[in-house]
Image (cartoon, rainbow, N blue to C red; front, side, top):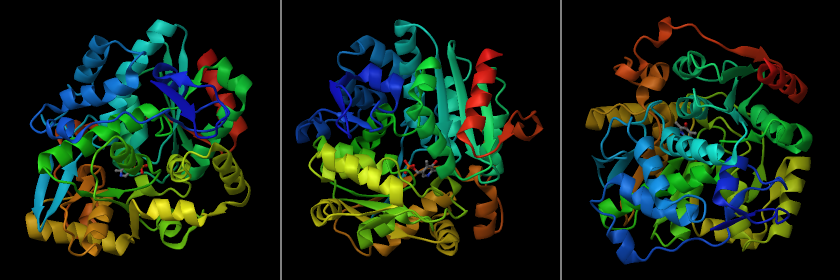
Amino acid sequence: MQFISTRGQAPQTSFSDVLLAGLAPDGGLYLPQSWPQFSSDEIAAFKGQRYQDVAFTILSRFTAGSFRDGELREAIEAAYVDFDAPQIAPLVDIGNGHYLLELFHGPTLAFKDIALQVLGQLFSRALARRGGRATIVAATSGDTGSAAIAALGGLPNINVFVMHPKGRVSEVQRLQMTTSAHANVHNIALEGSFDDAQGIVKSLFADTAFASDISLTAVNSINFARIAAQCVYYFTATAALGKPATFVVPTGNFGDIFAGEAASRMGLDVARLVIATNANDIMARALNEGLYAAGASHATLSPSMDIQVASNFERALFEASNRDADWTVAAMNDFAASRRLALPPGVLQALRARYSAYASDDTETRAAIAAVHKETGRIIDPHTAVGVAAARRLGKTPSPVVVLSTAHPAKFPEAVTQAIGSPPPEPRRLAGMKNLPERLEILGNQPALIKQFISSRLAG
Ligand SMILES: *Cc1c(COP(=O)(O)O)cnc(C)c1O
């Protein structure tokens, strides 16, 4: 399988190059040259199969030519060893035709593990083959950082730099990152927002001399390998239900929900994809008003979604424009310059045929946590609650409604306490973390400071 850039100026390349590069050299995002196709019979046959086997069937179409089947199988098996649920992504009925797709049973208790564990396994194999070292710089709104550390901490020839917005992640999220004892893990608390951190990562890539000198790579959802691994649960959930579903996806960087578009382009019958945002509602405004315009970022109860610029939206725009790379480049340049982009009618129509969008504020988030707790006894996390709040606004739908449950509630005890009066029980994975020493560097919001820090750590 070959991959192309949304900006049309990068050479076609293989899955392992995409994996090791992250961002395309023209600043665009990689997508498969054509989407692999699955028939409805193949999809129906996923019902009852092990998650790992479905993942193999789907991922092997992307990795063909880069990984042998045996290597891919091994990588997938290893990736999911440390999950608490044997189904990996269990589907839970919460009544009235609504379901939670629980994606938080991995080592860091958020859905990021599902893709990053696979990515870490493939990454070390690809790197061993290519030789040399790799420097991973990840911007995190809270969950990618710990998941990247869990997947890549301690691996040879890899350094991991994780940048989180200082004071804007939950205490549990911070501790999960900063208490890592691995010498190849470097935490930066950035004096800025997640968008600032993501902007710095992009500017490091733009400095091509620096990027190639340190073999810079990205494991944010701009890395297509993550999208590929996240398609899988859309297939398993649909196969389990035996009919097309409406998926409601708590959305920040648009990676998880774009994986739903990817699944549908691969032949999965998806009733609708519903974007659920918090008060950082750029995606809801883009869909509903036709203007993609970044505002100031707001701190909310669902910090992993406190994002204004949704990187993966570029992939959806490229597809919605019928893969018009020239238009995509012009649109992205306009947006970079003015922080706003009016969506042309054809593009908007294509997006609306697939997506709907709802934004919920913190009051609605707390209400959703309380309602689900009262009705089912389950405690959901504030990101899942943003999804549930959107699902409740859909009214009656002919299809089952599946809310992606993206994090374990124990990562956000303050939010849960505000909603139901007491914190969720602490899972064993978090026990004792508060007593461990923390390692982090507080740095100002300037690419030069980050570069300096990375260079000095790599030299030291
Ligand atoms: C990352 C994250 C999201 C948002 O996912 P995107 O792919 O960035 O849209 C939602 N919920 C949680 C808990 C997350 O960690």
